[in-house]
Length: 107
Length: 115
Image (tube, rainbow over all chains, first blue to last red; front, side):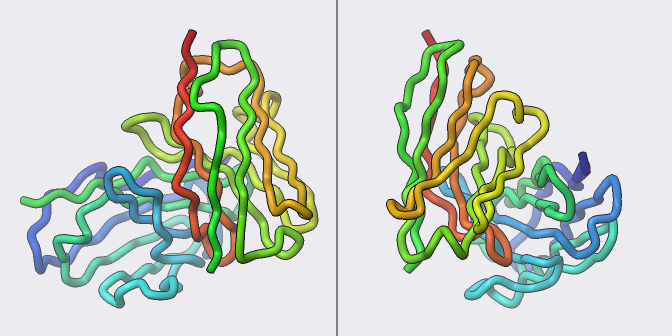
């Protein structure tokens, strides 16, 4: 099974800041990585698929990058509505596996 | 508009079998795949399995021996059955369409395993 290790586990940030979230796969998964955002009490929402493709309607302040084992989600200009838990998911091999999440909080 | 909605019993006794239904609208199950994902209270997401558009299935190896996913394309429904439930199976259960990412997700259905 491919283990997805997310870092940091949590992060305190300020409105307007640039935020970088990381996800490292235990083996190569190509570009088969998505990023999801989950706010309290809500279902997860897709942000990025295929490592770098922004889902329809996702603001362009969200950018995904990476290939192989190392992946990054960048929020270029943090907004209050971006406070959430972010998960990466690999679907390069069965079973699909999620990272344990990164929680963004206000400093 | 594509929508998915989970339904199920809410409360299941230990050692019993869980049966959940994901009812989809706005899409055909013969050209879309659907995954089941669960989330224990306060914890992260766990992918459980998928039924592909061709009807084939893949499962998380950790629960594969207890899990079955099937569908009724005429009713636009996907089913999850998991046996030998334990308290650690208490979770919110989601279904989601797999197509260039998992989206949309259903609202989820909370399953509590308790006597």
